[in-house]
Length: 266
Image 1 (cartoon, helix red, strand yellow):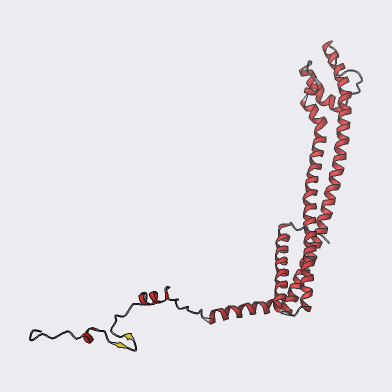
Image 2 (image 1 turned 90 degrees about the vertical axis):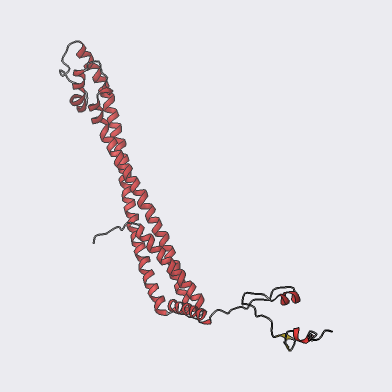
């Protein structure tokens, strides 16, 4: 070996170790994976799970317990019982008033249709009688006679509205005289229209009364639900029952606001 040169020391090239671990190896970042761990196990190391703070879940549970206790207190149940009882009574009163209103409208409809039928029969009888008189007056007019002379069995509408049409147009027909036909048949049409309006009012009032009757039955169920809470000792079950009764009460109030109020005078 040449002078001045020394053989390399094999111990100097090895990294220092402590308990089998390399102390001189470069450190890895937090996002880097140790290749030796992957090679030795064949899978990535499991990341560390960070537990959620217990204060958040604890506060949510406390708030829920407060809500349950608030709804299951006797005072809250009594208040709900009183409110639903008032709503039930109001719905029953309004249903009775609407039922009476619908009955009145039905009576007006039946009376109106009967009156319209009588007017129609009377108008038809007058029209058929006036047709005979109209033919005689036409004949008299064509012969140059006076159509107002002599006795006639015609109706008052014939002489007031039809004869002027005959004077203007001797060849016309009685049905072509619009003033006469309107005077004869218009009252019957107006009476029938009023009767049909009463029928629509009856249908609307009857439907509203039926809705309030069903609402009264539903409120009775809510009262029963609140009544059985006194014998139930599980707070969560009591809360569910009281919550259901509250939903029924809110739904009932919405239905009541959708129905017009029928006032009554004392």
